[in-house]
Amino acid sequence: MRAALVQMTGSDDPAANTAAVLEHLRSAAAQGAALVATPEVTNCISTSRSHQRAVLHPEATDPTLAALRGEARALGLWVLVGSLALLTGDADGRFANRSFLIGPDGAIAARYDKIHMFDVAVSETETYRESDGFRPGGTAVLARTPLGALGLSVCYDLRFPALYRALAQAGAQVLTVPAAFSPVTGAAHWEVLLRARAIETGCFVLAPAQTGIHDAQRGRARRTHGHSLVVAPWGEVLLDAGTDPGVHVVDLDLAQVDEARRRVPALHHDRAFEAP
Image (cartoon, rainbow, N blue to C red; front, top):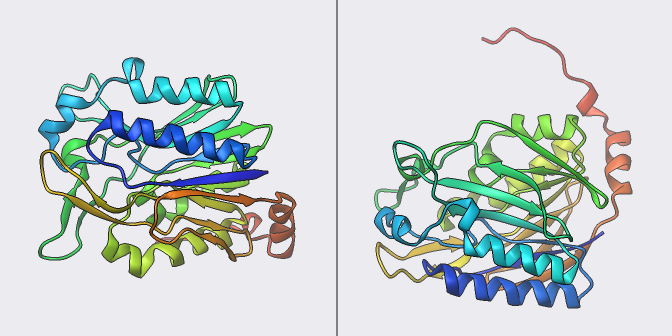
């Protein structure tokens, strides 16, 4: 399988982000990719809840989703939309952070709402309360496709290995971890956590990321780590995209999944134990 990772410096302007990602899809298709993966919050990266309420849409009418479905169909691509920020009908007004897998017919093959919310204090000047604006999901999602079985996740999920073990034991061969990772935690933890998830599960890991300084019409500008990664089932980094926006293509041999699991069949070695 030839996969492409889109690394982008999104803004809080959904129309501009959509135009940019469509160009990236066309570039990936021209390079022979069968699957293209975009980062978290592909449509709008913003720290302003009021701005989000003004520019976001429900899934049924979201223009970014509609455009990506149309382009996937036109190009005959599988597209993993890392996530879109979407309006919901929730009484508390919180948004969804939702990943989509779109088939080459333009149909939505799978949806996944990010389970773990990024509520952290990275430093005295850098804090996040994702749960203030976004409601968490509660269901793990495995998508079986002709290309392989994909286990879906988003960004902060990366710190919760039980999710990935459950996906792998359900049959996942490829784990997707689209992200908008903080530069501080990214420099310290991004690569080592992605490699750990690959090694623990014997899966390929595809992690397309936001990068750089993100323009904001409202709210504070945000900076993200970049370094979109592809990791092999034995833990080797096959691709590190650095910090520039662009499209990065890599070939995956899914036979390596079976080989890694044959050598270390840890997915079959769980034992019950009493918690301390």
